[in-house]
Image: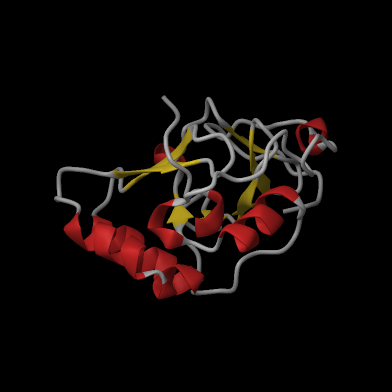
Length: 166
């Protein structure tokens, strides 16, 4: 894909201005105080708000027992909602259209939680022309790295470890 790629629907393209400088890097606020799964808050803040290209290390999610326990404990007919670490808005739901085992297997194969189009909350997520995947509020989430099955959103766990806002 070229640097000026338009990704196919249902991906919602966003303007580069989403990631303009704000009060706290590319976001109006820092990450929440008590992120889910006990992820590292300083790493989350750096990757979510002061970064456009880098990621948590490959396989980081496999080192987070609280997250792995939740995936193991989620009943087959339920899904996990992943929330913006800054705003608490829902961003992804998994698994949708596949099993938890398939979601985890694909994520392990690629090194990051890997979501498909049906698992994205398009009201709150945008894809920039270069594939960077962001929240509408300026949180860097990861990148869209399409494969033979379509769009695949490789997302930093620390960026989707927020708690829901009330």
